[in-house]
Amino acid sequence: MELEALSVTLPVDLEQGLHLEPAMARSFGEDISDRYRSARPYPHIVLDDFLPAPLAERILAEFPAAPMAGDKHYAGGYTGAGKRQVAPDDCNAYLRSVFCFFNSAPVLQFLEGLTGIKGLISDPYFNGGGFHEISAGGRLGIHADFRINEQLALRRRLNMLIYLNKDWDAAYGGDLEIWNRGVSRKVKSVPPLFNRCVIFNTDADSFHGHPDPLTTPEGVTRRSIALYYYTASERVYEEVPAHTTMYAARPDDEREIRQRVSRFNRRNYLKDWLPPVLYRRLRSLSSRSK
Image (cartoon, one colour):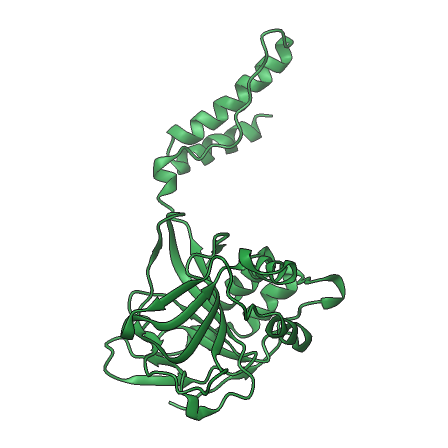
């Protein structure tokens, strides 16, 4: 399948630092959501010129070329070789602000509008994410990503990858390959070009990777930003009562306050104990009687 990249730029206001208006961000995502959701073999999209050019240029210029204290290195052959992972907290103040932006509510609004997935949560620990840098000979085999963030007990839902490679020669390899759900056919190859963003669902069979060793010359690496997004389980409602704030009157509070607190908390307990249909009916009757 021929690659069809969409050239659109996230409407970030650089005059005010890194500002993205939430409603505008959501609308931006919704405008291209049909393309995302209808993509095969699983929901995904390729966006060129994704960040405002000055922002993308500065991120690349400040990419931490020197070794950092928290760097992780991978040498697992097909399961990951020649990869350096840089933690956002090891970066300079500007890059830390960039990663905070990618974890911010407006970016979540954009992603929810794009994907239709509600209640997205970013990872403040950047588990597995941050900057990725692949050297000559490096590769990452075709795989489907881990599904649960065990530190936060969250379900992984999305990857957002932003490439930082100028003047990338096709002969270097390193294309992101998207495979069908049975891993019997490569559906698409995505060259890791500068300021190109790839977003996709991380389902059990969302197979992808760059499995062939890079053939980059000395001094050239494959650089990217990797960001992962999650949702919480709705089973929390089975584990924890869903009442709102509970108040307590002090022993010497006047009677009117104690009665008000008692009524307020009684409504909370009823919400915990009664089926939702019956609770709403009682609330409706109560409102009419006032």
